[in-house]
Amino acid sequence: MHTVIKEGCFVRLHTMLCYLLRRGHSPLLCLWALLLPLASLDRPSHRGSRDYLVTERPKLLLVSFDGFRWDYIDRVPTPNFRSIMDTGVKVEFVENAYITKTFTNHYSLVTGLYAETHGIVANEMYDPVLNRSFSMETDSVYDSRWWEEAVPIWVTIQKAGGRSGAAMWPGSDVKIHNMYPTQYLPYNASVSFETRVERIIEWFSAPEAEAVDFGVLYWEEPDESGHNLGPQSSLMDVVIAWIDEKLGFLINKLKEAGLYDRVNLIVTSDHGMAQLSPEKIIELDEYVSRDLYTWVDKSPVVGILPNEGKLDEVYNLLVDANPNMVVYKKEEIPQHYHYQHNTRIMPIVIEAKEGWTIMQNRTGPFMLGNHGYNNSLRSMQPVFVARGPAFRENYVKSSMRSVDLYPLMCHILSIRPMPSNGSLSNVQDLLSIEPTVTTPVPPHPPVPPPGTGYSCAPIVGSFLGVVLVLGFLVVYVILVTLKQRPSRKHRSWEMSQPLLQEDLHL
Ligand SMILES: [Zn+2]
Image (cartoon, rainbow, N blue to C red; front, side):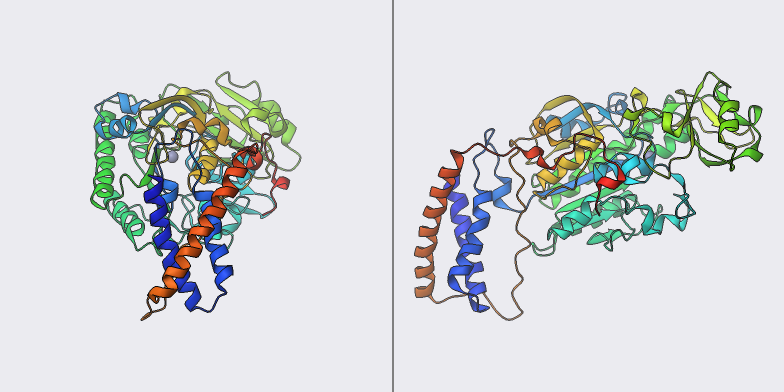
């Protein structure tokens, strides 16, 4: 296998070297620049069955079916989820981020940060510094300032010379740190899943110099049905089977494009879904006057902004008012929720117990299913399956945190991660190749100017070939020498402690 790889590298290096020489660069400089990447490419693997890192740029597609609870795959036959698990990995228990809402958790998945650090603390927010409100239902979503407390993975990839494509992922059509994904679809709920998939396939299938390395794909179901029907409804069985068919469509399209065994595919979700009941409603109007506060975020975790000077009064009226809700002053929120150190988290936060709905009174809309509850609840956990050249086969892992996905994706893509709350060491057993020090991959190959080729005179080519072989020998000796030295740990890019905003210098 090594012989084949090195021959492939030789041909590629030879043609690239010729190109650089034609551009007037020094031969020795060109040779050194081209040989450097080999030091990172040709590492031996302990599990060693796959060679994706050396044959092409690694590719990764992250898919989210909104509100796909972890146990849905066992309710009805889901052959397409099964096929991914059988040829890849499954994680049974995924602890997502508090609060278990859509925007909060989709941003955690692509930043590796908890809500208090990435700043998307809810679907509805108020920022007292900006003196602005955010709602996922309004154009406030497109105000960059809400998103720029963190750096999503597509920005990091593109700054490293890679390309990304986004189909409707929350926040992916917002200009963040002055950058959009290389390819993206502006959010439009009426665009079908099939159309989103076809765009993603086009982006991955483009010529190497234009193809995306990373894609995100979002679909609104089964969340919408879960809200309307309630997760316990037998009608949800039909919805789950329908989602499995959607996944089958994606798999077939990847196969038709020759991508299925080349792209690392991760299928997960932002949260689960809990069954509600009209018998389990908490009416805040029974306990506190609306004149004393502003209602910022909705059930089941409610953000309360008391009027000036009314914090203690509102808190005292609510704290022991109902046994089915827990009332926190902001500073009392448990540290392990990672939901305190942000000005967008309101001075009072009320958390309903599982299945309970907090309303001001019963005149508001009522849903049969909801999420947002405590992230330790099993009903709030999302599904997680993955397959591809980076992943082991037929492997089941018991648990992970959703913030660990970010360093895992950065490792697969060979990009240097931003500081995060996640840890690669927590999830490295999912990988077919043992993690090593993350080394940035080279940028996309240069595109030759129109009308020029890579052809070289045979004599010059032969001479360079000899030089390259000598170069390989030198690199081989260097690598053998390096292998005798203890390897650096990859944890250098991980943060074991929760990050505060001040820790990020964006
Ligand atoms: Zn959601």
